[in-house]
Image (cartoon, rainbow, N blue to C red; front, side, top):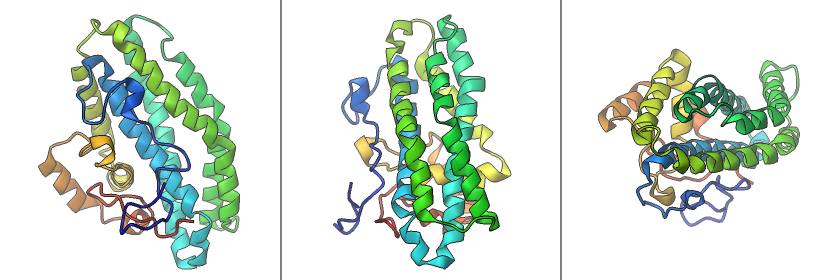
Length: 263
């Protein structure tokens, strides 16, 4: 839980909420997963981006108050995390999970995970509302209050992010139902395409990229798009809200870096 940059001992975004290891699927870092575990492996990457994101908010939300000029951008960064998490779960419930039900032939196979979404829903709403109020000036920004709100829902959310991987791990019993590797690749491509909106290109994509560490368990570059296209997207869109991404734990190449206001 320390920064990998310059050998410092400052807290980093692999805690306080632990990242998910590929070992939870029974693999070693860099090992090729079985096709029926492709979606589980993809979700580990996505969930770890979300975990690094909230960790970076949690670790900096108090100390950022020392720089009043930085608070507005930090609020935007923290708000982006809530919006992306909400969109992720909407995508799962309205699109990915129904497709899984259709492929496996088991209605309700993902219901336990949907139920878990509701378990932290109120806490996420409080998080979003507080940041909106702080942004508009209805409330004075208070990092300690934001940290308390995160503590109110994050343990439940963290458990959900872990449990969903275990649900997908069990897809070995459906390995003959479809080409899971192709389905995962096609699904990931659809999700990336769905982010190609004005907001998605300047908020969602750069947020996730800046919270993906390529060196972690040899995860490599992500999302799965051609490197040349990725380069163009970064050039065109990642500079738009660059003051927000200063709070992220990785640079746009996925290299870990210090959190400027970590406590």
